[in-house]
Amino acid sequence: MNGSFRIDIPDTVIARAKRGDLGALETIYRAFERPSYTLALRLLGDAESAREVVHDAMLHLLERIGQFRGDAPLWGWLRQIVVNEALMRLRRERGVAFEELPDDDDTPGTAPPPWMLADARRLEGALAKLPALTRSVLWLYHVEEYTHQEIAAMTGKSVSFSKSQVARGSSRLRDLLEPEEEAAPCLTATAH
Amino acid sequence: MPDRDGTLNTGDALAAALRALPDAAPQPDLWPQLARRLDRRRPRAWRRALPVALAAGVALALWLPHGVLREHRPAAPTAAQVPPAPAAARADDLAELRRRSQALEGWIAAFSAHAPQDSRGLMAAVEIEDLIGLVDVQLDAARGSEDALPLWRQRVALLEELAAVRGNALAVAVRDEDAAPSTRRL
Image 1 (cartoon, rainbow over the protein chains, first blue to last red):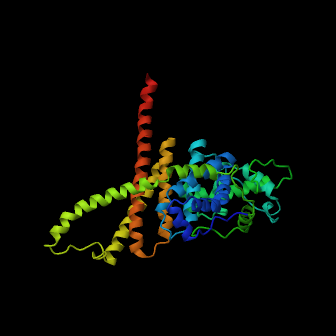
Image 2 (cartoon, rainbow over the protein chains, first blue to last red):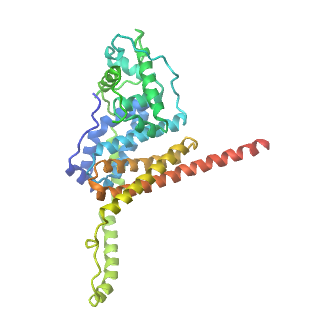
Image 3 (cartoon, rainbow over the protein chains, first blue to last red):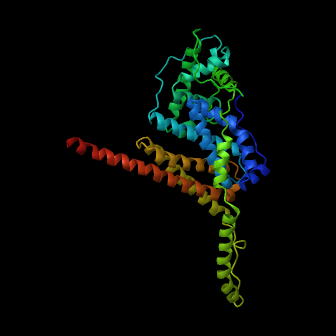
């Protein structure tokens, strides 16, 4: 289950981490290991890249924790670092111009949306088939609840671009899930 | 969230379906690797003690003659005695910092699209963006303008650094574009 980034770390643990206590640093790492990796995996669609992003993001956070004042949620900062690192990787590895979805006819019918009926494996398979930027925007908007303005700022695109990616991504997901053909997942998240 | 539209129930259903996907953990475990890196960078006791001792020595050397002289002078106000900036002045400063921050963000957004970055530039930019992220979460939690003012100053300074990184990439891109036709002529 996602949406578990909003974890409050006790002040005492943060204070110990600021002093360089490895036990406290590990407590923080363990608390955010899964939400960080899941977010990176959904954005990048590749397990090894996601692992590298989590490594770099955690290192940034834990090395700079001394600069954290403690009156704001630590998770907010870490989540932003993970998103920044993942988007940077997408830009670096796939170029500044991400592959984008063309305009689609997005006219949902009266039937329940197919993602309400699809199992996790099929939904993950369909997500994996979306272009990286579309999938990222969709995830940041729907799951992480970033606004279109925030997404526009993070991706270096416009607000209307973010809105259209959410609409087109949803429409493409619907198309991918509606046919009964078997979709081979390549973004399978293994629960541990 | 100002622009989250509640127009699509299908959107809500999609959000729920995406959130219900299982979490995952990195395999193999990343912690041993991180712990080694963090331990290597942790200051050893003597490394921590040395600068403190040096600073104390310098402070003592500076303070002694002043301390002797001060016996015959009126006491200078300490930092604690300096009155804080009046609220109106703080509000002006905050407004100016916000305006500057907005202008810098606009500049960065406008030029980023035209300035492809090499990976070193990208990493430097992300490093600064991470720190801006930290300032932003702290700004969200700031209580009052007295708290917010130093954070806004920090934010503007970081944005200036980011603008410099982006500006450098833009300069390189322009230079490459200028150089390209003459290269082709050869």
